[in-house]
Image (cartoon, rainbow, N blue to C red):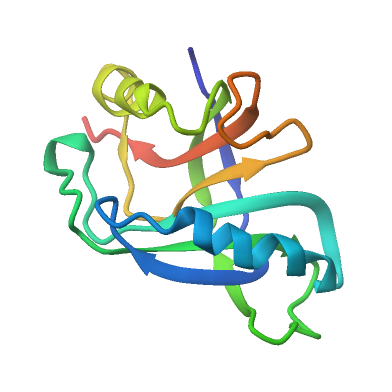
Length: 161
């Protein structure tokens, strides 16, 4: 599976966030609180949902520790951050270069991330960049369904020679 390399501008998002670890994953709680309320967000650009992860000093699976805390957002892209619904916050997603993998499969199957970080990234002309990672969950996304589709955005930069 080869990604598309895309450079994006910063994006304005509105949503909810939680701090969590992989050992104490609270993604389902975050989305249960966000999804029923997302219709209250005005000025949305699309119906796609962003699942954003903010890691500190993440360099790949070799230094992965399931107890390390990170922040996760469930959000919608908006044209401006006025009229923020109660209980939600604005967030600006950093722009830059991303490797975008179109993934078909269950969101509970982590093999795609093993492929990205252990196979594709080391063999590519890129290294992991210290910016947000995110997934875009569009109309074809179905949680934990083998036919689900999503786009996985991995922050990269060119390897130095």
